Length: 357
Image 1 (cartoon, rainbow, N blue to C red):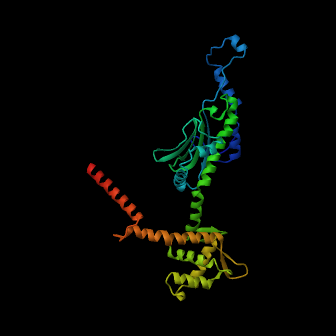
Image 2 (tube, helix red, strand yellow):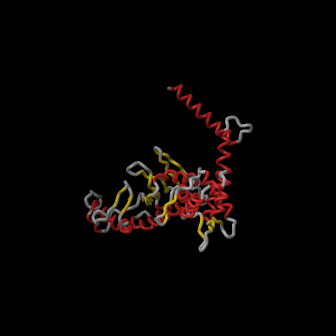
Image 3 (cartoon, rainbow, N blue to C red):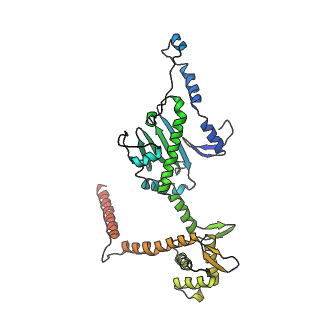
């Protein structure tokens, strides 16, 4: 890539960024059995060998075989801050990835009782970065987060390592590399597909941030709808109510309902505030203005977000938080008992550390 003038930024075993990804992939695909053979033959000609002139004339030569082949996929994440959270959720949702039923999906091979090898999932932690491992016979697939130069984990690395080509009924000679390449890269993609079906928290994180952070659309900026803001929660409740109105809702209706939810007199809740709220909801994609009118309707996305935020706040966050912070509850719940046990264990560990010191 340097010789061809393609700008790039390298990782230790991959690319962080590249000016021309298609040409970079083309260069990588050019690593053929013929090129590898030519490079090795260059050195084999210089090394001592037991073949006599008669042996060489008869066609006897060293052959090149594949002892181990690794096929990797590096995906650089845009949001480095959620990289660790993203991968930990992947691990949590895919602890059964090493089971025979899952492994055969990844490697495209049927697994039965006579299939040799241990089928298991291993989570190995080196330092603070965990890695996910699954085995098929003597081959394995591994997934982990790569650290960039600044120390943040921002690239998801998926690697299939084939230690014995016979695991896939393929010979060991170098000419079989293209078929091994197909199997290895296919296994990487299938693992990602299985994980996508099981869990996709990255999309959820993005959807959450689109609500609780400021947005800008068509040059217009709207402030965030923060989860813990009483005014935002009132707006969510209003959207759930107005979603069943066949002809939408108007400025005055929203003003009256918001004032009631916030415990205010509608006369004191200014029209400017309601206009501001309507603008926020519209730019966040929660409502749409009905063409030719001054009325609004709740979008499908707006209803889903409003229901989730309002229900979570009213039925989970407030009651459960109260459950664990009340000094002496009359009837402790299972959640309270669990928090009390954790609190006692932390205190015990602190006491032991203090005594040891």
